[in-house]
Structures are given as C-alpha cells and as structure tokens.
Length: 275
Image (spheres, rainbow, N blue to C red):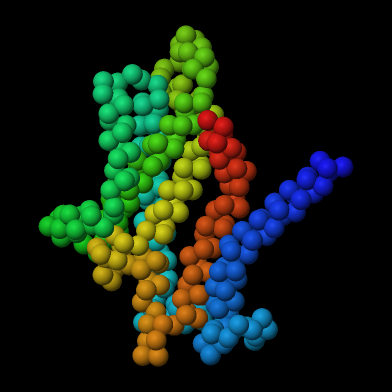
C-alpha cells in the first residue's frame, strides 16, 4: 500500500514538472504566434480572443523591410554551410575515429578548444580580414565564418557515432577486397546516417540563428533573418507585431525540418546518448 502511494505521488510530481516545463516552453511560442496575427494596438493586450489579420505578413515583405531578401540570404548561407560542413566533418571524424595519428589527441582537443573561445573575441579579426579581402557584406563571408564555428562541433558529434560502429564489419569488407572509400560509402555512412543527420540539423540551426557575426560583417546585401528582426523599429517604437510575424517565418523551417526527419533525429539522439 505504501509503495502504491509513493508511486502515485512520484507520478503526480513528474506530471507537474512536465506541465511546468511545457508551460515555460509553449507560452513564449504562443505569444509570438498570436502577436503575428494581431494588429499593433492589440499586441500589448493579454486577451485570448482577437480579430486575426494577415497584414503583418504582407508588410514585412514590402519596402523598407524586404524580408524575402533576408530569408533568401539565410537559406543560402545556412544551406551552403551544412552542405560543405557535413562531408568535411564526416571524413575528419572518420579519420580521428579509425586511424592512429601522431598527436591525435592534441589535435582533437585543439579543434574542440575553438568552441570555448567567445565569438565576440574573434569577430574583430574576422571583420578586418574580410575588409582587406573585399568580402564584407557577402554571403561567402558568412559561410566561411559559420564553417569555422560549426565544423568542430560537427566533427565531435559525428565521431561519437562512428566510434560506436563495430570494426569487424569494416575489416571483413577490407578482407573481401573493398577499398577504404568503398567501406566508408557502403558500410560506415549508412550505419552512421542517423548521427550525421542529427549533426546536420544542429549545424543548420546554428547557422540559421547566427547573429553576432552577421550583424558585424553585413550591412545591406547579405543581411540575414536574425539581423533583419532587429530592423523593425519606427518612430512609435519597436514593432512587435512585425517582429512576431518574422519570428514565425524563422521558426517554420526548424519545425518543418524536424518533422521531416524526426525518425532519424530521434534515432540519432538515442544512439548518441547510449554512447
């Protein structure tokens, strides 16, 4: 009887914790979603019932905001970064996982140590470098910066998944006459695919949401969505109804991407947790 009561109390406590976490996560999303469909005069009123409007979405795509240009920049920069970063990170992670290199541990720690350097410390050297190269306010500069930030994280993450692949299968294929590249293509990549997709999602999210470098090295042509959100100001103050509408557009690709590859994402996270 005592055990039953304790179990019921534990279940109730767990339910309350989950409910509190859900409220903390969902309330800001609801506020943004509702604000996107409200008129400016209704944004600061906490009323559940209001007359929805799509005018905010029309306004953010018109001059002077032109959010479609910033949306295109974000898509190209984040997509190009992931397309370049994931193959490079996969090959580097395979090398660290399978080959015994000289100073291997030191090199791996040096790669990881770049993640501990605050971005604000290195933004000025990047700015001066791109200024001298004539790359300021270009998508190429943003892709290069994002690669430097994302590659170490992707290498570390994918290496964890490759470490968990049994060596026996690769050795058997090598004995049967397969080349190293054939082993990677036919055995390693299919088995590590959930982890690679998980790393790709996180890399895309990091590149999509990157703000500090984008606001420093872009001015007009290569401005991305996060920087575009900071431009919604007018004489009457911050235009929260337009920021909410743009915020919905920023979140939609993340939700869509997560829904499409949810199966691989969950499997990849589970494998990563086991290891």
